[in-house]
Image 1 (tube, rainbow, N blue to C red):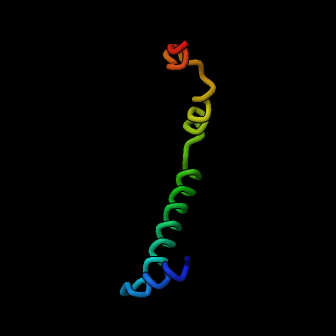
Image 2 (cartoon, rainbow, N blue to C red):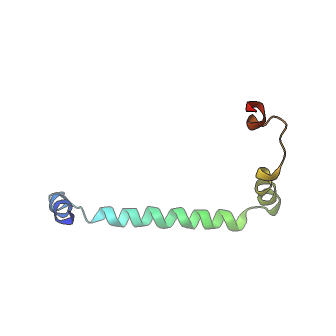
Length: 65
């Protein structure tokens, strides 16, 4: 299967740039995500982490029963 994909990719000009662009996008995404996690406020993290544990009176699951 790989030989079919490799054969098609050899016909594309400058195909060697695509893996580098993919790696760059992957790396930048995780660096930004890591930065956001480090700089996030503790209050916000605590509030968001408690959302699944809160009892909501307007919960849709209660309305179905």
